[in-house]
Image 1 (tube, rainbow, N blue to C red):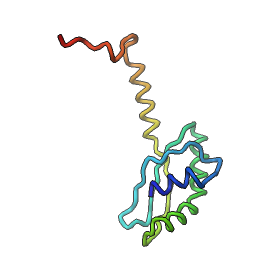
Image 2: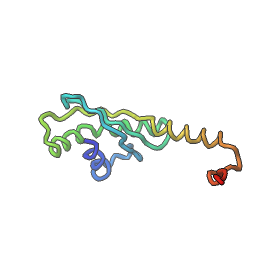
Image 3: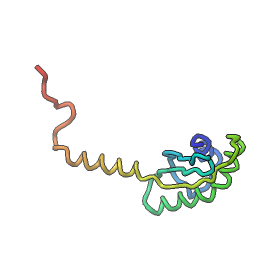
Amino acid sequence: MRGVIAELLARDIKDPRIGMVTLTGVEMTPDLKHARVFFSCLGDEAARQRSLSGLRSAAGYIKAHAARTLKLRFTPEITFVFDPSLERADRLSALLRQAEPHGKSSDDSPDDS
């Protein structure tokens, strides 16, 4: 499902609201009737909301294409959810860089001799 949606976003969907979107995962219910598609995107809260709006608008088209491509008994209802994990990882990485003593690089490790 993730691959089908990613391919559609890259090739077919030209909605300008959908910016640089990365699909981070898909959770399907056991009966395969519902799919939560997690995405991340560059930009601020306004860019996130625009991307979410564009993705929601394209959900019907994506569902129809998935039905033809995947040949499942039921085509899942697709819900897009913003995934903040990449944003949190970036913020954590920045905090770790700030906490690192200045002037010390990873090459300045003590000799084992």
